[in-house]
Amino acid sequence: MKYFFFLLPIYLLLVSPYSMASCEENNEQCIEVGQWDFAVALGAGVITNPVRGGDNVPLVVLPYISYYGDKFFVDNTSLGYTFLEQPKYDVSLVAQLNTERAYFERFHPSNILVSNSFTNESNTPSTPVTNPHPDTGTDSEQPDDATGGDNDKQSPDVITIDDISKRDWALDGGIMAHWYFEEYGKLSILWLYDATGTYKGHNGRIDYSYSLPLGMPRVARLKLKIGAEYKSQKLVDYYYGISTIDTESERHLYNGKAAVNPFISIAFNYRVNENWQIKFSAKQTWLDSGITNSPLIDKKYTSNIFIGGLYEF
Image (cartoon, rainbow, N blue to C red; front, side, top):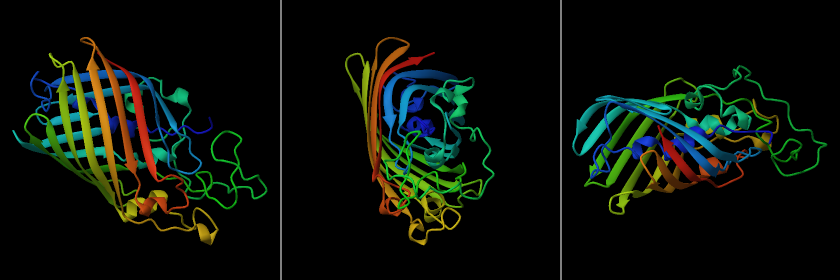
């Protein structure tokens, strides 16, 4: 496989460990304070990549790390400070890696399992991104084959990840709020702005989740979530727009537009013993036309699915 896009941060946002920890047996919303949590999920799964020329990403080994203090918290690629906390709601300042760049990153699968693997998903690319000019274009004499693979060639009628200039990582900062309903329901709102000046835009998310404990005692949990992501025009244009820096072909030029992407997800955990859980999770996100109209995109949705075991240290 020629390209391996490090989409692990996207998956971790779906199944991050704070949704699994509870400080009281009868409260699904409660998180244990003052304790570092380390876990590794082992199993099989995939994240689909909507960028033309990119490969889907296999999920086999997924590390987790989190810490929640009285105010400060760390959750994989996110840092936060909770400045307002009440029984029914809380508000935090947050900073986290923007995962859009992950669709354009190239890694070999073996690079996942290296030292400091807990933090590699949030680091900058292994090769510094300094070239503002596009890579060499597609050879017009090559056959019109499907995308992906070491020896695949692209038709001159399409533009792929090989033809465009590099997209940089960005660090977002903003505000996050949660409202809690009874023991199991939660409404979340997140607004973030590009703190690094990479794409000079903003993004947000709103979702409602319902977590239902199963069994007596509560050895299993089913979590359903529905929501939508907002991406500003500047964000979409930076990552999915096509400019003269990317191509000399005028018919491929595209100015990105603001997008609203609805999504739905489901997660199921079954606790086998003190350390092991069986985990299943799946998420489907439908991409707005502001993204899918880009010549760089060849799918109208992204999906991820994972099934396996989770070991908590």
